[in-house]
Image 1 (cartoon, rainbow, N blue to C red):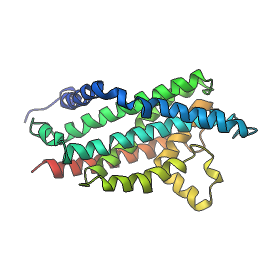
Image 2: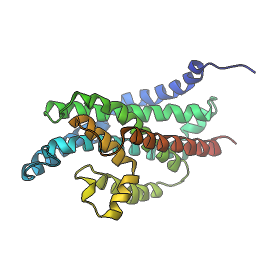
Image 3: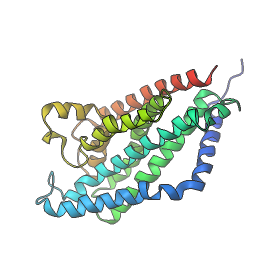
Image 4: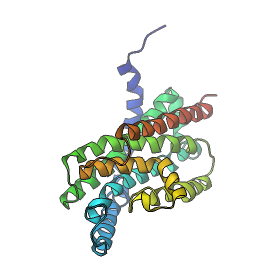
Length: 261
């Protein structure tokens, strides 16, 4: 049996990543508003506009400084979810790209890993740009804000991998509308992005703590403000890693079932 080195094993996945990257080079202009301008407008509307009426700020800091780390993670959340839903379903049901890649031949792990790498690239690009703009507005209070980028990468995997698995299971985009309406949208509203989670009723607070977005927001807020997170930082990282690992396992199983005849 031939032993394959880790570098050689990674090469096919990188080739899949490059395929998606080449496609993005031709279409990136269409994502500028949703990935870059819309988060900035949200920051200005809520942080500067609404923040002017929030006297005293939140948790001892101006409202703009408080919501920026939440908006960074919310941006990462939206990009990860969008890039892992319709594109994945389309590659199975409409464009059949995954089937063509499988016939190349590429392994299931290469196809999934390469596409997931591209999604994480999109997440880091969008969230990193937003963080840089927020810093220009003076809404970043600590050099620890640089730690937000690896947190964004881990959080992006924790969101994208389970959505990959879900998108690989369904056959019509009607189920994606249900996912966004009843799972992803409530998560973005009740995970501490715009206000402290401890202001929610006890039942909703428990639900917020289960959601991966709250863990990403808490880590991001601690980094940009230079304070300790509400929960254990290693606990946050372990919880997000668990979501990413479970999502990868489920996605790989679903991809294998559809691609390996």
